[in-house]
Length: 79
Image (cartoon, rainbow, N blue to C red; front, side, top):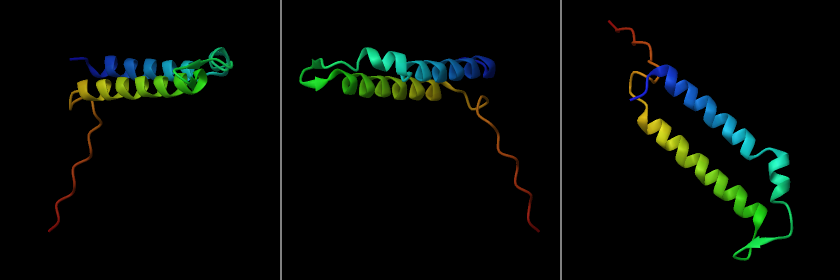
């Protein structure tokens, strides 16, 4: 299990990976008129990168321990 610092670092790394994956220079590579199984390569790339990021976020969220998540403040007792 990763500690809070490691989880935070992985979250930041995942954000940067997503920002890089959807940056215009990388999208221009797939912006041509080629296709993959009849699907334009840009659309195939966008949806596959999106799915990969969702899977990685779910893995990261699943591995987080309860102590890694922010705590909610205790509710005051009503009298």
